[in-house]
Length: 448
Ligand code: PA5
Image (cartoon, rainbow, N blue to C red; front, side, top):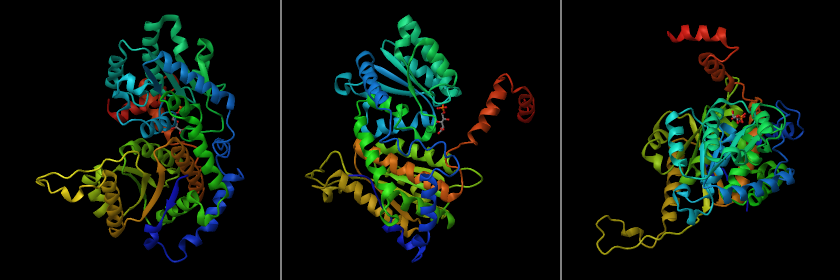
């Protein structure tokens, strides 16, 4: 079963023919995407990826994952943005909530530690503490091979690896990068690291189903065949189904309809803590794809019911600038029944015999109605269960919707020119050769 889309609770915010009137614009955007005639059309390798992937490399990923499982207590996954969030989303969603804290005997696979996604010396030092006395390997992931954050972490942990294993260290470094270009590729060639490829035609935030996501995901013991199968099933669906039945097209259309009504923020809401990083992945996918040319929906996310005790007030009652997209897991992975207590001091006996999931679903359904009453249009994405197949399906649902939605919006969904501005300033302030004139100007502006 693949993910499905429910917009029944948004009906009150739509004119009688509004969605139908948006059909042509949506189908045109879909055609632009599939005919590869739009902006950014050299980055569309993700469209066929769930079926058209490098099978030899896929097997090598499985073999490498097996080796890492055998010889490492910890896998350090070094990357940022699209070279980070997909793997983290999958591992957090599909693994035990306390995966890294479990005994090795329970977990059976290495701890997975993500780094290179900030420039924090505390975070790096804390990982160094954690790695003491542990066997570890590194998966350095960078398509460009030149990104500062992962390069810094990689330097530190590569040194630690060499101190520990000497010449054998290189056999514990796995590089996922461009097939020919970049500093990381050169280093991998020189040092003989086992390498995996980020295809030329797949941008970072669309790369979760390449080696970028698949190697760490496989090391965590997740079935990557199932992940691909779920993505392939949804690909089949969203490429062929009519507009009225097509989850990705309806979602793409509705988010643009709401944007045009002044709903500039999409709040992705989950009721399952393990979806937190899936929502982070969604934020990156849409934020980098659509937020450009002074346009786009601002993608936000909340973890519910946690944030009903913080952001819930704003969603219910603050400025009416948002719509909400709920991620609902249809079938819970476990059932915990609430018991009756002899003295009902906490007044909770009325829930005796009910499952925790029933309570959670009631909270979700009640909140959806409350938010709708508070003028927040609601969309719902139904995830059948917590499985690799469902997650693969969800990844593809979102990627296709994002491509179509970006073209409806009129931007190039596949570039990220805005990411460069902070880099140029940072390089200038760091004194990187070639940035001398910017440096002087920035130092003056900072008053230093
Ligand atoms: O989606 C993107 O393209 C970005 O978020 C990149 O993934 C991110 O900037 C990291 O880039 P790289 O993989 O080149 O280190």
